[in-house]
Image (cartoon, rainbow, N blue to C red; front, side, top):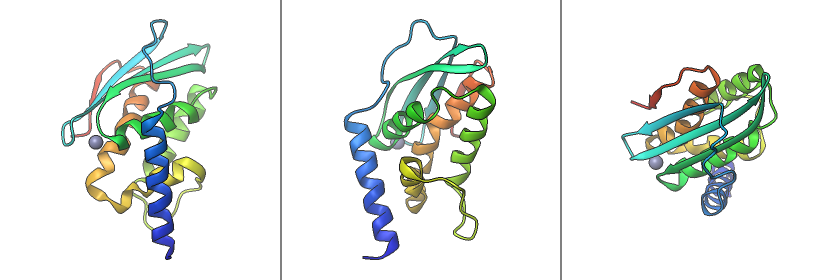
Length: 151
Ligand code: ZN
């Protein structure tokens, strides 16, 4: 098996596992920030809820409908960004977003489930499914109450 095959298998397993059992998938009535995102290319929709305590992300949840990749991406995001400060969360989000388009010569310093998710770049038509949750989170973190679209 080649490295690319390993990566594709890890990607498939991660997406499957998270989409079947999404973490933090719920409405949050006590949210202090909310952002909604839409990927018209695939029909994915996601709403991200943040509960801030000072400048710390105390809780994070999401709701959405869409393909397995969009759900898995939001699930992984909700686990990765909890308990970070706003600055840390913005940095982490930028780093994850950059890995969806990075080149082999310039890989970001990321591993684990987020690196597996980043392998979506092997399937260019699905990249927007994976970036949707992170772009929506980015809007919530910057307090631009707005609707995000990947187009
Ligand atoms: Zn999708």
